[in-house]
Length: 579
Image (cartoon, rainbow, N blue to C red; front, side, top):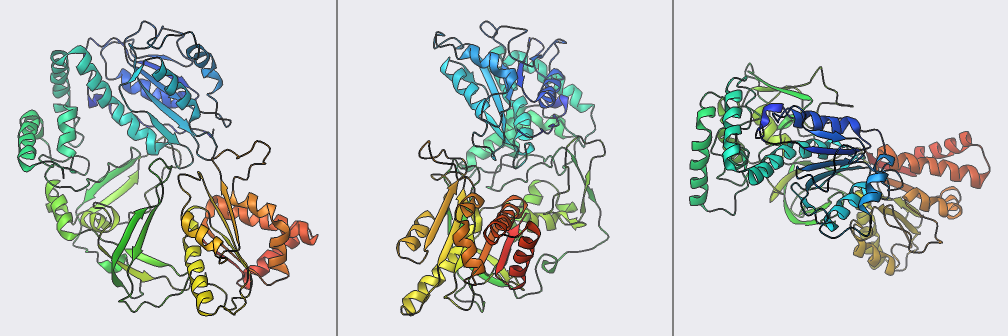
């Protein structure tokens, strides 16, 4: 497990809990800094000075067999998929097979698992504890979270911690009674009225969620209006003294199925600054190349719902455009949001008068967030309206979008179809190779007597049953001889047979076929194409090719690197990679 990142807790006054709440129990295994964040945030929300209770290694200070206060578990996972050493005693105790099925029937808990999807058993430490607590009768008061260090722990950790306070509030309401919560709300209201109006605090979790919920497509207008009336009554006293902002809006907001933009990360400062009349135009986000309006003919999800990353296939109809292209070409997508919907969103946020104000982003000076950076998709010195139009998604896939060709692209098939081709494209990197194979299939149909070189494809993904993109298409090409060699690796699946050596990544499969690939590249004038992740995959593939050339030709690493550089100069080693 890589080093963790500390998540910043929400402001302590977000929602005070009833004064009668005795304790919140927190177990943490492996990530003390993050657990301390939860502990500090919880302590600020309860009047009991000794709460919450926290243990770095399970029930050393209290016994879960008798405790009725809610439990929060934060647990990491080792590289082998086991819970960390600090959790072993606790896991061993709850794994006791003599425990009855209702041993923890009184227990309500929430669990945050920390892991890294680069390892085979992602978040397995948390999954083991979660499953066993369920088997012993414990029930969730809050959904389990699985944070991935590979893509950034904060993407799950920070929203999970934010939602934890609302879930605990709801739990205390149901267990302690509405009357106690009303007392706490009165206290919270008094506190929030004394605060800076630019940073309002949530005084009523459920009503505030309704105020911010814009996806109400399934609700009748009468229900929406009735809910809005209730919301106005519950919060009008506080809102009267507040102004709308980028992080909070004034009700009602629940009459249209628009997505409200997510709140900025805790480490960012966001300010609106009055602009001296500068206006942005579409030219600031489009290229100098021609722009074509094309309809979307198809949009489907290629991965299963339980895949770690979702992949969509969007097909565009370019038959009626003067768009010259060949397999391997790429294009820019220009997809503004509807102006009417942007205006509607600004109106509902009560920011219409500030739509031309510049949005200024800055990293907070006191942030403890590792690697904190400004979002790359937000240009410098642009207006709020510009950001909502060009930079943020407030709708699903549109029916028509704009595209422009990407110039100076050499990621093309060789003019001579008889030369061998090696394609390396894990994940979505396989996309251009589908075009290569479709083109080759048409060529072979039109000119069946021609000689065609071998086509190798090295594809990889996490799970064969979850994110094997274009599986049926690749099998079709392979069955009909278009694709002569299909080599696939699954980094998260166990080998089919125990005696098999694991082939987890594309570079592992490339290494297994080193002799054939060296012959194709060095003696048969072959081409190799690499498409996908630049940070890890492309670098690892390049290193593997250096090793193969060094081994098969019998030269040192430096000479092997020179050979590979020559292939690049000859446009026979081509990359289309991104980070």
